[in-house]
Image (tube, rainbow, N blue to C red):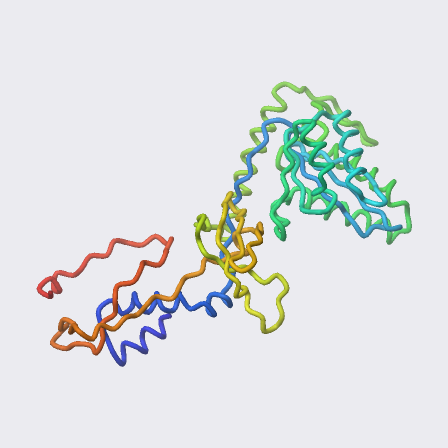
Length: 352
């Protein structure tokens, strides 16, 4: 952008030339298709008020003997429940959840990805019957279910160790959960079992009984402070900014399977239908099909400005000279950056 302006200034000049150059360059569609994706939206998850109120669930697949591991994590206490399945079906998910509800209670919401087991009508009806809100994450955006994703990384490492050592990975996983549930967490300062049940879970290590006075409130306050700090750090590290997309905007969608010469974004245009935080619903202008994507997978499409030449009027002279054509005023391009107030110098006040 700077080079283009400098090159033009060495040849020609006309009023508001810099502004017009920015509009024309930003409206170049091939340039927008090959540009980097926009920054992600700031984290905006609601902080739970009680343990076992908001849960996250997912599958760990590719395990020995073709088995899958159904993992459920409590957002507040970090308590983990697992169930080995073969095959992994929605009916088995419902059965596993029902056992957990019977032991630990019915949560308010469960977050899951768009796996076929979680998109089934049976699971939706099961959640409705128990008054549980089933929240499916945005496709191709695993960060939205980060709590269970992080736990599955740790579980995956423990299973790999068992495979390397040639031991029973299912038994080793249960031993791991016993130690995990009785280990204080950095965010809450207490163990997941103590946060959920109000008491320590006994393990093979010697322990002392601690008073539970104001345990939950102090742990919850610490958890909220830590989450706010992690949110601020994460937003700063990712340079997160609000995307600014609104219903009616025209956008292009990111190519998720990139080749060496493919542009970052596709040529097909979409209309924004609905916006919920970083989750955006768009409709194809060609097929009419709707898609749900994270805002970083979409880019606001700037249209080319119409440059018109008025041959019937002469440009007002600027410094005793006139340009050969007149550029019509164009619609302002959306700019969310903060700018300082610009005032016209007094030495130009005598110009018309």
